[in-house]
Length: 485
Ligand SMILES: C[S@@+](CC[C@H](N)C(=O)[O-])C[C@H]1O[C@@H](n2cnc3c(N)ncnc32)[C@H](O)[C@@H]1O
Image (cartoon, rainbow, N blue to C red; front, side, top):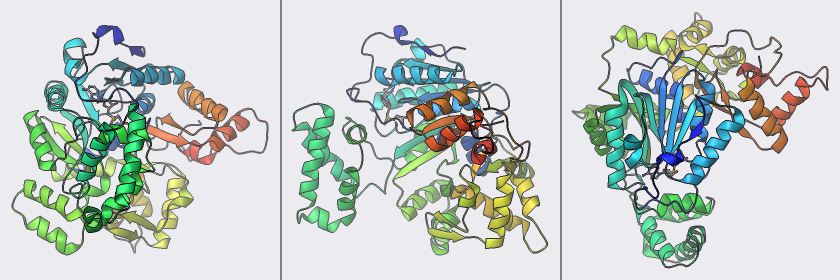
């Protein structure tokens, strides 16, 4: 398959009204969109992960510059990736980026959601993802998204959908109205109007206004906006639509499209123990329905952004043994340097601590590369340790972001000296990082996602490949991640 821009298939200005196309969105990577990450969520939610060994299909709706889809396509060369966005500048840059890396298994479409099904022959999908879309598009676009899900998500396929939600935004929501009205009153292009609106908003928030005094978080929010790029703020606040959801209402929308809630791609949200104290967890657990428990938990944590994962056609009924086996088979590893695995990790409730001895053994284990949770439990188990607790520690370390879900276990110990970069895509990406001096997300088959590689690491690889320094070792993190083989 070739990387292609299907612009000619579209007629002019078919975009849904009300979404900004005057300015591009920041070019960002989201690890939660990886098929491996979504499979891990399915596993935690007692669902069946999708097969990733061979061919599968993946669609991103509203892909922006396509960075996440490109990284995932590079990490799964046997799968077929599709992505669409209404903004021509996004699609053009995405096509160029994929071509620069030599990635051929992704097709980008300059298309609205509304036109996609009519204009493009699409297969059914194992994964459909949309990040930063649902709260920001109008009802016609949302109806089209639901239609795409209803018609194109396979039974058992996984859907990722993120959105702004209530009650977490309730105090700050009026800031959007103020920002929008201030921007409307300004002259200039959209970014200039955004910047001017923000300056006025800042001035207003410095006054003794009762709203700001009664809601001190709003002053901090305005301060935080000043650190965001103007194009991000324009896309966040200045579209016609900015809809705040209760998560159960999104679940109702998806149920109408035939998809059922499985869990959260914000991994900690799947573990009440990491979110709230015991009394709160018990009050939530006592509520009679899953729907009420979900709503109450959003109030318990004052949830403002959700990354929900749904399954097409309803969850597969697995036995308890199958659920446990799926978790044991899930592969985990460390993306960062293993000495950064610390005895304390940050979780929504605060900090969680692990025994130093356990953590030093974990560093050694992870230094050899990714392993299945089952194998990790066996390796870390000894007479004094409870195997159930070890497994829980590992799952909590993944939820805290210290460890990550991986696609493949490491076949060989990481100390074996590699000879070359893993493939042309990795080679192209590392050369570009070394040349520009800018960090970049590199597709990584072992992780099944993208890895941010810094300029020093890429330069070290170039020096090592050129053998300019004979006794230099290749960067161990990249060896462990299978980017050098
Ligand atoms: C907030 S941005 C998110 C981009 C990307 N998913 C990310 O998170 O970086 C929303 C994206 O949706 C695209 N978009 C908005 N409405 C659309 C529509 N009706 N059809 C297709 N794309 C749309 C925009 O062009 C923009 O790239």
